[in-house]
Image (tube, rainbow, N blue to C red; front, side, top):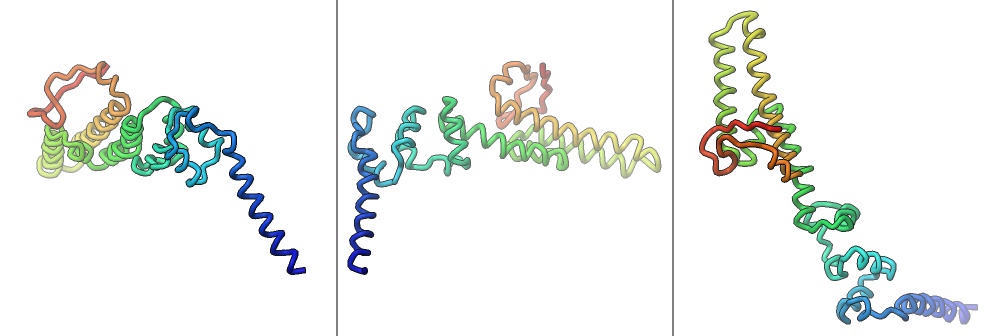
Amino acid sequence: MKKFILPVIALCFSMSFAQFDDEWADFDYQHAGLTQTEFQRVKESGMSKEKLYHLLELGIGPSEYLREPWKNLGVSEAQWLDQRSKGMEDSEIDRTYKNQYGNQGLAWVSFLLPSFYQWSTDEMATAVAMNIAYVTAWSITIFALEGKERIQYGAPFIAGIHLWSGIDAILSTQWDNNPDARSFSWGIVPTGKNSFAAAALFRF
């Protein structure tokens, strides 16, 4: 009985390898725009022909895919393929997801910690203005107001600075995700990393 088992196992393995080879038997790698080296890497990676065709339809070369660029971008393979199918380049994907999951997270924190987002993104003038206003608000509330006046006048002032910080951060990250939105704003005084004074912006 054992004499028949080993040949049967060997036959199964040979059929499996033959089936794999047959998948690429009629494939013309040159017609697909691949080099022999690229085609060899595709086979060695275990990529299916269907997967390769899908990548080529999206305009993604197998060499690029096998580098697994989505890992460096901090997104999943599915997200990377989805964005590439929409015509986005890696730099655009990187900017989109960083703003969505990075800066926007800082923006929400800035509601609780005034100027946190502004310091994190080097918006020096705005951050300094918020800090001065925040310290002033607390100083007036603690030392100049008494009793009910602290709640009536001091608390709204402090809460307003929290809102200023958070809303400014949310609007800034919204512009980052949609750079064209900046064209609808008029800056009265230079702001950002190279700013030298606090800014007033009219947003339409």
